[in-house]
Image (cartoon, rainbow, N blue to C red; front, top):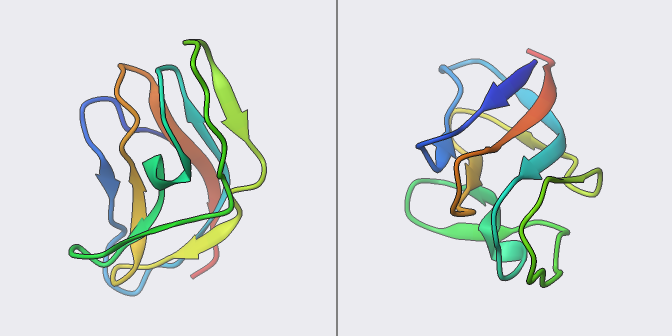
Length: 91
């Protein structure tokens, strides 16, 4: 599955669905790994992306493999029009 998150920062699957994020992507500026990760709706946790980028352009990250559910779900707070993820549904 490929999910384009343009205009939103969170992707929360339906109850009972589990997804493994295989790759995150962004087309705008971002400051740190806290721009990608997962959240429970209140707390945000960074994933393994801890890099600073100062130029715009398409980027994708294989280092962002993690599972999401309806309780702990994906966020991508990178500003810009193009962002999202690719993954597989495992449940």
